[in-house]
Length: 234
Image 1 (cartoon, rainbow, N blue to C red):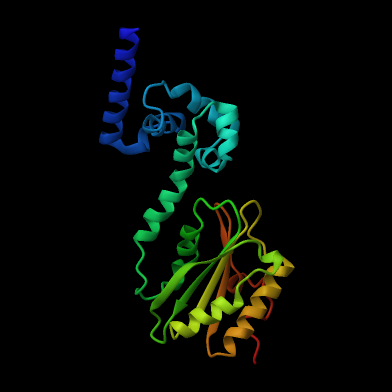
Image 2: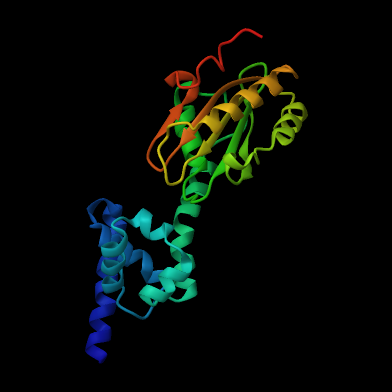
């Protein structure tokens, strides 16, 4: 028993040394997951459960997106260990968001990627809003709603209030399709037109609306899928 514990401890130390020297670049997915779980399961070999999780869910992302009760019931994880897995994408999003500044010049070429960061780890639909001032500086960027656009829950009043409060001149929206494609639905297009018309009435131009998925996004303006929403004359 003592030898087994010593061998287990030695394995963990070798894995930590490997990570310190190379990061996760030289790890197989099951090794990375195994090591991540060290800090949630301190006294047990996490290699078998890492393999089982990947056998079921295929990717680390899908493991982290699995329901907490399923992780506990099907894999014997404690609530703390299951929560620790769920924290991974959330911390990734916070890490990436912390590198953004709300007073930068808006980078039009990379807006889709910036919006993607806002949706890391989100398994339900949400709406993000970015506002710009007359000089093209970002003056607001945040999640303004959680819930399906199809339910007409998009908070137009909140969008208007934020635009007025920040004296915005431009706006950009995004929402995610967590389990679908980046193609817009008819409801998406109706909502986009309504938001744009409402903002134009207070002197704010909604320049684009992005649809985000786990590994893709589209710009409704650039894709041409929005018809004349962004180009018609008022």
